[in-house]
Image (cartoon, rainbow, N blue to C red; front, side, top):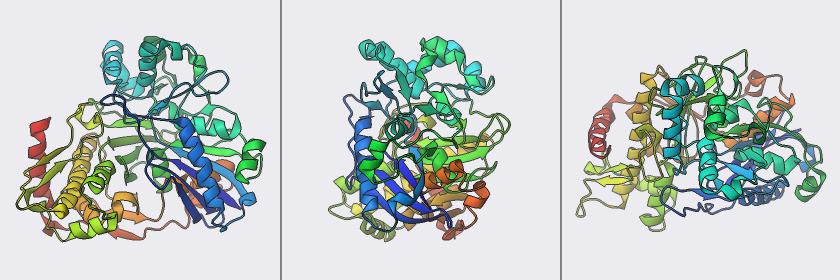
Length: 491
C-alpha cells in the first residue's frame, strides 16, 4: 500500500510516494525543472496562476508514475501541502476568477493595519493571535476594494490547498488550521472571526465547510483518476500549509518541539499548548495540524521572506554557471565573516519581523579589490543564517527556547557553510532528516486515512541522519552582533 504526497511550492511542485508499512519514500518527482514564474505587476505584488499549479501537479504525478518504482493503482490516499496565505477565488462554476495573490505579496499591508487599529490591537491579538497584516483576509479585502467586478462573482474563497483538493475531487473544504493562517479564525470564541467578517464586510457563505486536517476532504473524480492512472475514489485525507506540514514531516507535534526550513522563504516553527502571541505580531501563531477544540496545539511561526530566494538570485546573477554544490564548495574556502562583506537578505517583499516594512536587500562593506564571487556566496548564506538568529531572538522573547531544531536535509541545509553558520549563530544544535514537504504530506494522508493508528506509529522509524552541534571556536556570535549593528541602519 502506498501514500501520495503533493507539495505545492512557490518554485515548483514536488510529489512523493511513501510505502505505508515502512513510512519510507520510494519515489519522488518535481515539475517543472526550472523555477515557476511569479508575476509582479507592481512593486510588492506577487501572483501565480492556480491553473498553473494544477497543470504542474498533473505533470509531476505522471512523471512520478514513470519511475516504475510502484504501482499507481496501489496508492490508497493523497495528502496535500501548499504555500501558505495565498488567496484563490472561484465563481459558482468553480472557475478561477483571477491569479492567486500569494504569500509574499505585500499590497494589503495598509489594509491589514487599518483593520488592526479599527478592531483594536488587544482584541486582534487576543482573539486572532495576529494582526490581520497582509494575510489572506486582507488580500480578499484588497480585491473587494480594487476589483469589485471580480469580487461580486466570488462563490468560494480558498487557500491554495483547498483549490487543488477541489480540482481532484470537486469537493470544497477547509480546516481551522487553514482558516487561522488566513486570519479568519477567532481562537478565544473558537469560531470564524466575527470581527474580521464584519469589519471587512465578508459574507461567511464564501468560506468552505470546516473539517479536521486529518479527514476525508473528498474522493478522486473518475475523469481525473483516468488522466493520472490512479484509482477513482482515492480520498484526500490531509491538507495543510507548508510550514505546519514541514513540522509534521519532522514529527514536530508536541509542545516544545521546533522545526526549521530554508527554502524560498525561511521559517522556524515551534509548537506550544498556550494561546500566545507576539505583541508586535512579528512572529505569528496559527492552529497546528493536530489542534482540536479539546487540545491546544499551536504553531508559532517565524517567517523570513528572503532566504533561499537570495541564494537563487546570487546563483543567477553572480554564479557564472556554477550549481549550488559548486557555490557551496567555493564558499567553504572563505573564512567566516566573508572578509567583512555583509548581506541583508530582505529583497522579497515586506518582512513581518520588521513590522511589515520593506527595507530591501543590502550589500554592506563590499570591496571591489578584495571580494570575489565566493565571498558573495558565503556572505549571502551567513546573512540568511543571521536573519534566522534575529527572528529566533524574537521567539525567545516570547517564551520559545528550543534545545534542538529539526530540519529536512534539503534546500539551504544541504550547504555545510549555511548549516554551520545557522547552528553557531543561533547556538542551537540542528538534527537533519531525510524528509521534505511531499513526504510529510504523504504521511499526513496515512494518518488521516487511518492507515496509521496515530502519529507515533507513522514516525516509528524516524531517525536523524546527523546532528550538527555549535562550536564556540568559530566566533559567529560576534559576527552576528556586527551584522546586526549594520542592519539597524536600515530599520
